[in-house]
Image 1 (cartoon, rainbow, N blue to C red):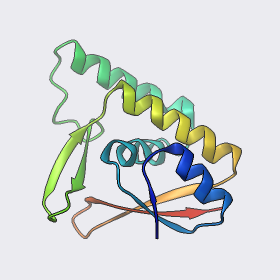
Image 2: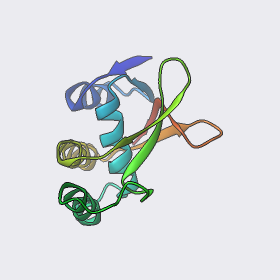
Image 3: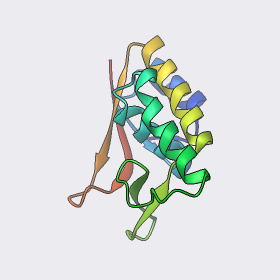
Amino acid sequence: MTEVLSYKPLEQAIENGEETVKVTSTKFLLACAVAEKCDFEPANIDMLISLVMDAKNGCFVKDNPHYTFPLLNSKGRTFRMPINLTILSVALRVMQILNDKEATVSLQKDENGNLTGVMSISK
């Protein structure tokens, strides 16, 4: 299984016809989750930008399920990671690559809904 740390290896995996990859960077995994949540449409990211800006301005948004994503660490424990502007910008780049390559990704989750880091690619 190919390991993906950023959008360049993702682009290469799509070109090579890979169907399943392992995302080893939590920030890139989160960016892919944001892209999937936005249905790979960049215009849908506006709501998440508003949440991030509210959080930066001190508004209480941490309980919002759109602001944090549950992830599994290497020991199988769950932790929640919030999105930020950097992750949103990477998500926009992921969406651009997927739209250019006419591909979609599907992130696999465990039985509790936590992201596992395994991603399926379909064209």
